[in-house]
Image (cartoon, rainbow, N blue to C red; front, side, top):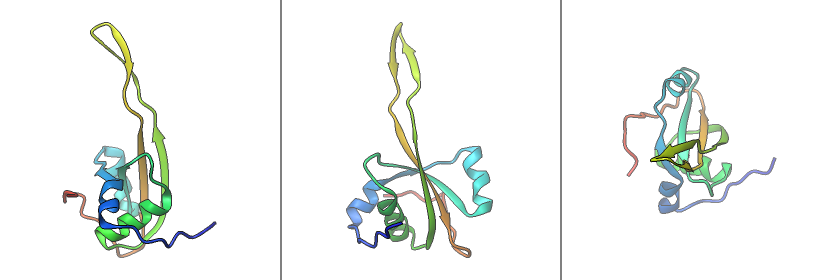
Length: 105
């Protein structure tokens, strides 16, 4: 696996991480030192890792990403799809934590 040590700007780092996910499933992952975030669809694993380390000042061990496909919904009789979203599950090194109650601005 190729290591991506390329530095990214503060503006790009803030545009990659959209918001933290606070579902029941993602809060159960916190006991294993894993956190879930919605990220931009054009970002890759290396950029996500660098932006988390830059914004929260923590050491990231592993990043898993997945694409959430939009559901089929009907609105006033016409069918449509919700937007696709990209989710990242971040595993942090021991001793590092992220306070998920903070806003990313």
